[in-house]
Amino acid sequence: MLQGMEISDLVEQTVATWSSERPDIDFTAMSTALKVNLLVAKQLETTNQHMLELGITLGEFDVLATLRRHGKNGVLMPTEIAVFAMITPSGLTHRLSRLEKMGHIVRLSDPNDRRISLVRISAKGRKIADLGIEFAAQRSTDILDGVKSADLVVFSRVIDQLIRNVENQTPTSARTGALRK
Image 1: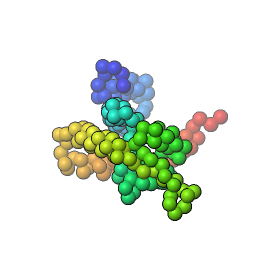
Image 2 (image 1 turned 120 degrees about the vertical axis):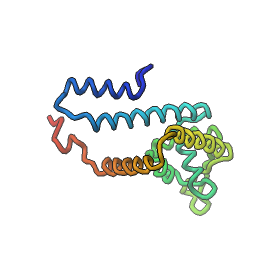
Image 3 (image 1 turned 135 degrees about the horizontal axis):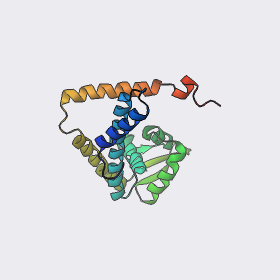
Image 4 (image 1 turned 60 degrees about the horizontal axis):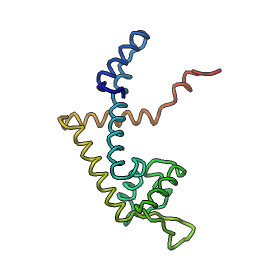
């Protein structure tokens, strides 16, 4: 975000300049999407900063939080962690190595099949996961402060529809043939 610029000002300026340059396009939906994107970016920035203060990255927190909320005693296979944390297995490898070096996780072999590796959250990792989720939950509560319950129900339905739209969407370039050589 531009330093010293509020989210609403940035969106308003962006839409105004685009509307001036391209009056043939309706930027109403883009304005709303931009607001959502900027809110998410700000939320991630704030949460990441807090996680760094705890000594981990936001991505590492995702792994710890996944272990903390899934599996008996916080034990999962790396493939399960990758699915639940929505990252690729290759992206997970570096995170697991760092978390293991910090003492937040322990890697184990499955006692029933030594070929299968398991990951268990340590007491230290559990404490960090709890501190991180407490912050994230409170931050979400703070952001939604003052929004009426009925409005949150509607907003949640709108977000659910947006998620369905994104999941079912064909990329614009494929639909229009844009950018073909």
